[in-house]
Image (tube, rainbow, N blue to C red; front, side):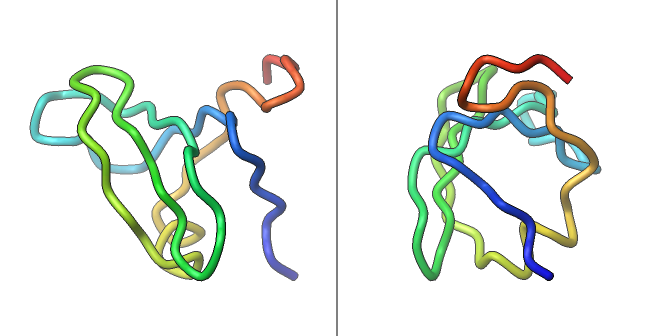
Length: 67
């Protein structure tokens, strides 16, 4: 069953971005999911499958719930 992502979610990935940041904000949903690095504001597109594989945890949900 696929993970339910929402625009505005903050997620932590397993490996850091080259800038050193681990946390990303979901900015686009569709066949590809757009992410924005919370440290350097760089944007990337990942397939849903790739994101689910790299996901470690949710830091904050779009509705404001802190996990």
